[in-house]
Amino acid sequence: MDKRSPTNPISEQVIYSIILAESILKLMADVVVNCFLRTMIRFFILSILLFLVSCQGETTTLRNIENRSYKDLKMLIYRFGVASGDTLHLDAGRTKRFSLTTSDTAQEEAPDCAQRIDSAYTEVVGGGTLTKKIQFDSNWTSETEASDGLPQDYSHTCTFVIRNSDIAD
Image (cartoon, rainbow, N blue to C red; front, side):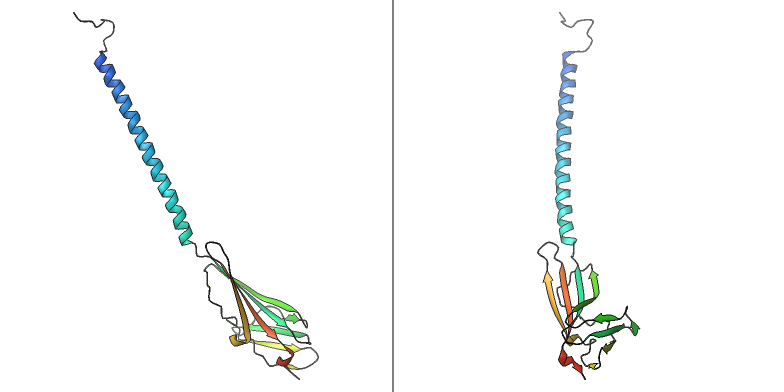
């Protein structure tokens, strides 16, 4: 005798099949989600590594003129044969910044401090002639500082120092 109810046409076998299919789908969904999460974590870590490796840092170069003499000076700097900015008023015993450049490339090496300087017209207030040439890199001092972070940045400070011995009467 058949124990199935005539009002319930779905057999136990079909119900077990549906429950089994549902369990398999849940398991597959968990596997897909876990796989997706693992892939996303790997992608995130790889992105961070690429970001850190691809950053190059930057370089800042500051150029100063330090007047250690007892005389005030007026200086007009020429680059590529053209006056570069206004006349610099260099008071005795003072330092004046005249150039600040930045680069999106980290450069550890000391820069050519006299880069692109052709010449300078200098007036010594009260008389005299400046004998030291600003366009020669050997007449400059350079200091370099490196940052501690990643990517490493570099800051160069170039200084052209004028002393009393550099001024002829």
